[in-house]
Length: 470
Ligand code: FAD
Ligand code: 8RB
Image (cartoon, rainbow, N blue to C red):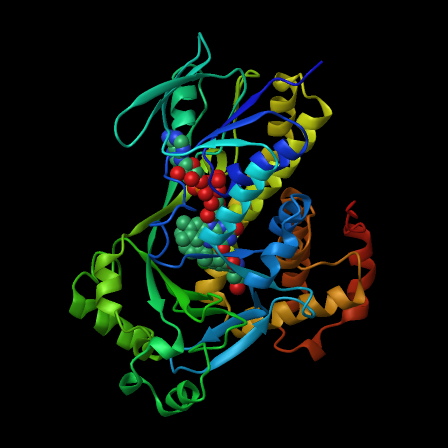
């Protein structure tokens, strides 16, 4: 029996990967995307927005055959570069060596590469087609383009990868209860740009950077790092772009002092950065323009009780589980969704109801776990990375990892460098955290800690980590 055709709504990061994987497996795929085709002339330019790609994301690209094409245009980030209030920097490595790193990738390039791959595999993508509503009685999508022309499309199986503001989700909610809840973080973000070194006016630069500029260096800061300016209740981060610039993101509460409400004028923005992020000021030539001109992005976590409507429609990626950005796992988890869904559909191409139910059963606990860990990591990044207690705990965790290979794996490593299900990473992380806290109580250095005494306890409460098939 031939598999039923599948319609995908949204050709963003998850939809374009899903279309590729399914088309490569022989499914007949039609995609509708609200935006115009980003590969057409006239679309290029604008701000460079980058993302951190980790193992789960690479796995999806590898299955789609895109790893080798993407690798040369990504920038390796070996660790977090902490910028303290006095401008001193310190690199905390993420992993043990250069195989345990994360990668900065341009969102536009990643998306267009996957659109090309989806089409090459046979998927048909219609751009400038916004889903407005679904008539569930006749399984008909109603779509609208920029020029207001409308069309409809009959589809028995609809996959919604239309992002956090999903229109498919809204249409599903009209016929079934999804149990939708959005927990706002109460903090929002602003993007600013550190241009390539050659594009920063020399007169503003400190002497060492002026020399670097004269030597023709591309980057104004260490390129192979994710930069963090932790400031307690808020922070800035910066990720490198391969052409030499950095995208800086300020995360700040909506209310209080300082906040997006209190830092509101051009003069406020400059004074705030001069006080709290002084080493960035010479590097951001358009500070006021960026701060006032770029939109403020809202942050929060989206939870649904149900992701599917019978065998007719299923939500994936941000449409079903948008999370806060602080673990850099939104796209990575969405890619994992796409891989798992493609596997399930390939195994049972004519039983979408069973596949959707099984997908939700498998993925929901993992989505809940990464949502929680992403919230935790905000506090770690903005407040804990510079703290003596935290550093001792981190050092102890790494020591125990070396003593118990295959058993003790720091949570950050499980999330970032492995494909151990997030829910398991979360559970094992809780056990490890409890042990670390007990061992460290009242101690100020590793030398004071009785490691031998902890060994039997660790073996008892932590089984070997599950191994992964490739
Ligand atoms: P999206 O990528 O949002 O795609 C949704 C698509 O659906 C879009 O193309 C949209 O145009 C289309 N669409 C929307 N409505 C309709 C409609 N009605 N009809 C048709 N099409 C529609 N994740 C990481 O893993 N690492 C990171 O470092 C990271 N950094 C990020 C930085 C920023 C600034 C942001 C905003 C997010 C970041 N994320 C990161 C999260 C990541 O971008 C998302 O998790 C990921 O893009 C989700 O993919 P998606 O396909 O579900 O949604
Ligand atoms: N969405 C990231 C990490 C963890 C880094 C660490 C954190 C920006 C919006 Cl905030 C953030 C991480 O623990 O040292 N890995 O990858 C990406 C992050 O922010 C991205 C760029 C981002 N996501 C809305 C803005």
